Image 1 (cartoon, rainbow, N blue to C red):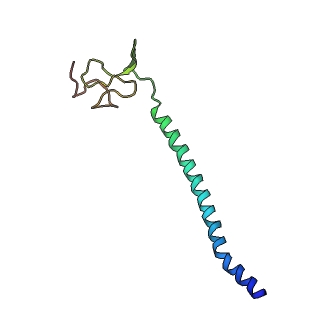
Image 2 (cartoon, one colour):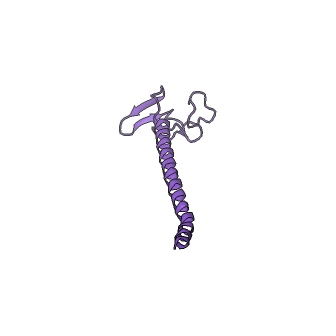
Length: 99
């Protein structure tokens, strides 16, 4: 009887250990994914918050715009200046083309 009980315990020990390790790994992975998503969300917030710059102005009926509105490539957006040079200044831009 003791041998049978020992055999059952030895037979069930590896699956129980495997389930315990898988559960621990799953919890650790879920925690890391949660932390990564929080970091990514915070990084996106910091990326989209732009300081008020000198070439940003308000146009009635449209909203805030960046850059020179007379340029052909101006995006007419509050986030980027133009399609060719989205971050750079409009002064002395070599791609400037009047409308």
